Image (cartoon, rainbow, N blue to C red; front, side, top):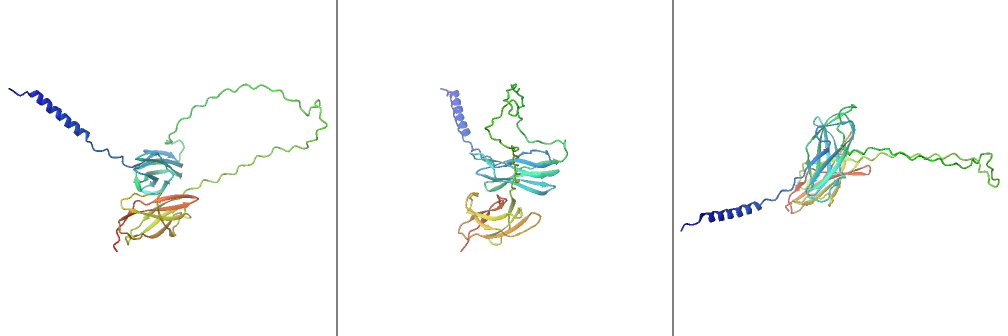
Length: 313
C-alpha cells in the first residue's frame, strides 16, 4: 500500500516551524546605550551677538556624570575652558542623564569652535564640536535661545471711579477750631526712603585642570595643576582602589596639598610629589585637584587612572 506523502510533509513543516520559532526566541541581549555628551545651545553653525553667552549641554553615563565642560578654541589654539560642577541629574537610569550650562563672559567677535566634555563614570568623554560665529554688528542674523512665547497682554477696562465727598476743611473759616486741642506745631516733611545699597557682584568660581607627569618609580607620581585665579587654594588628592574599580567622587581621597606655585598673567602652576604605600595587589589610582577661591570650589579630575603594580618584597 503506498505511503501517504502529504501528512509527512505537513509534519515536517510543523517541526520546522517549531525549530524556527525556537531559534527566533533566542536573541542576544540589547547592549545598553553608550555614554556620550552633546551641545544643546548653540547647535550647528550658530551666530550670536558679542557679550555674555550661555551654552547648554547634556551628558550621559552608566553610573554617574559628575562634571560638564566646554573647551573654546580659535584657529586651533585653546582660549578657555568653562566648567559646570552643579549639574541637574535626572533620577533613575541607567543611563544617567545630566544637564548643565556655562557662561562665557565678554565674548568678542570672531569664529570659534566649541567642544563639549563630560566626566562620565570617572573618565572624560569628548563630544562633537560646534562652530560658533560671534558678531558685534547690530542687525546681523543671530541665533536666539529658544523660549516659550508669552501670551499677549489684554488690557482690562478699569471700573469708573465715583467721587467721594471730602470732609470739611479744618482750615476753612466756617470750620470752628477746638480750643481744647493743643497746637501740634510744625509738621515734619515726609521722610526720605532709604536708598538700597548696591549688591556686590556674584563670585566667579575658579577654573583649572590637572595633568599627571611620567613617573620614574612605580609608586610615585608628579602632577602639574594650572588654575585661575592665582590666589586660589589648591589641593591635589589621590584615590587608590582595587584594580577594575570605578572612581567614587564621594569616596575617600588622600590629600597631598600643592607646593611651589609659579606662573604669571593670571595662570599659576604647582607640582606635588606623592608616594603610595606598597601592596601585594595591583591597584588603580585616580587623581583630582580641589581649587577654592571666592568661597567657591571646583573639582578638576584627571583624564584617567594609572596602574600601581604589585610590590615584590
